[in-house]
Image (cartoon, rainbow, N blue to C red; front, side, top):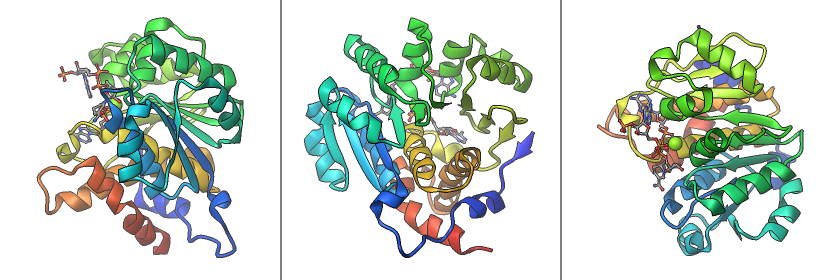
Length: 278
Ligand SMILES: NC(=O)C1=CN([C@@H]2O[C@H](COP(=O)(O)OP(=O)(O)OC[C@H]3O[C@@H](n4cnc5c(N)ncnc54)[C@H](OP(=O)(O)O)[C@@H]3O)[C@@H](O)[C@H]2O)[C@@H](O)CC1
Ligand SMILES: Nc1ncnc2c1ncn2[C@@H]1O[C@H](COP(=O)(O)OP(=O)(O)O)[C@@H](O)[C@H]1O
Ligand SMILES: [Mg+2]
């Protein structure tokens, strides 16, 4: 399996053109965070902002508005039940994230179905967490979009029907081809299945990452990278997966556990370092 390298990351994270503005770095909408899982969507939106997305909006339960504003004043908010507002916002977006902390109740399903009905074929749609579980449980038809699934192994079992023991590279690739989407199967050594490519493996990351919210954080980094970089989307996806874990490895030199919020805070410095390496 091909290994992602730091060199690949440096090819994606380029110094910014000085004559640029926020619109040059893409618009991201993160959708999720019910009344119990607000932290998940706050971490996703934060990771998108700190990885450099130009404009980030968070569609969530209004109960999360105050905490989101307090932690992340850079983000705008919208009530995720407000279909009229969502219908206006969605076409403006380059990247959508749906699922972190969304939950699997009737409200969550209605929001997911609405987003599937509105998303456009050129938009990147990152489907994570509860949204993966809903797609699997409800056997939803996937919309025409640039879809990236980010399941952990149990979510991948729900989506692909493959038990953990059956999740071999060959079986994973076959299941990914059936979905006709990019699939990031997260584990200690995350595997990335991109349409029309042999599989990739992430060689970095450690058990210091085994803490709640770590996958929510990854969704925001993926969104930030897809929103702003001119590299092929496949390269941006691989670079995002590596960056998430490489930052944890740097922090883990001093820390037993690395928190998602600490990885988020370290994104700008790591990205500056990578953008300067030849
Ligand atoms: N702060 C917040 O708001 C947070 C909100 N969150 C949100 O919660 C929602 C539900 O997501 P979820 O991942 O917590 O639950 P679910 O989908 O039931 O999966 C867990 C089951 O799968 C199993 N399992 C097997 N292999 C595994 C693997 N490699 N990695 C992980 N699990 C593995 C695992 O096995 P066990 O732990 O029992 O050994 C268990 O039986 C989702 O929307 C998410 O965004 C979280 O992000 C946390 C922080
Ligand atoms: N032992 C480990 N080694 C390397 N990476 C890990 C380890 N445990 C978890 N991770 C990473 O942390 C993230 C966990 O994602 P996920 O289970 O969706 O978390 P959550 O839903 O709580 O945000 C994945 O990117 C996974 O690769
Ligand atoms: Mg998750």
